[in-house]
Length: 311
Ligand code: 15L
Image 1 (cartoon, rainbow, N blue to C red):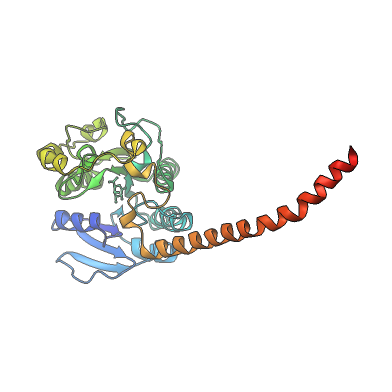
Image 2: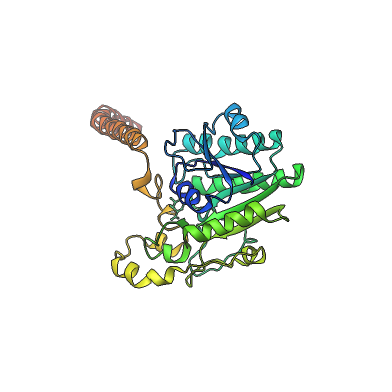
């Protein structure tokens, strides 16, 4: 049985995949925080993707890596840089050094989020990321392309829409992926004998899909689910449109939001930092306003005199 490493195994996608893949592979789970309850066939190895030494230890001896680790929404540049750029490089580089050829990279619909919802895109369409997060996903795809061409590695990029037990809103009716469909794609990524560098969309067979997923189908993907079965329920709950730009684009509120495409997912620490920076900026503006009248009073009379003298 193959041994498959899941980085970021403690997150929601990792949890879905652990359930779906149990018994099919030996699963080595890795995350920065411990995962306490392990099923049979699972082992846990702690590791921080920001450190190459950790990744060298964690990736040693596995047959394939499912890279889910990193920051999963829009965030400040230093966070994206460490988790999704440096962290990703560490995983690819550790795999190369340890001779692990196959990597499944969990990329995202946000690599393409600035396409409009009335546009159909496929694996050949050029990226239009909607956020720093989206840019980091494009970076991961392109690093995969480099490692495939230069080092002969086998890279399978899954642009995940939204993995959940059911679609959460109207936008997700187009990009939802059920856990079992995602697991089917993942199995193709692990076991297909002929992968060099591939991009597929991690979405179910949704009637409202914005993607031509023919590349996944070519590799054998036959989705079992369609978000449409939830459409009536989801649309009944849908709130009125709040932001036209988000509504127009596939990336939804990631295209409009500066920090936190999905603000409820931004860590409190980041919010606290932002709040502090905001109040500092406000104080600075107040101080400038307070100082202005004085400056005006002292300059104006002199200037007037100077003008009078000239005449
Ligand atoms: C993603 O890439 C995120 O990881 C996930 O949390 C959702 O925000 C998803 O995209 C989405 O677009 O719904």
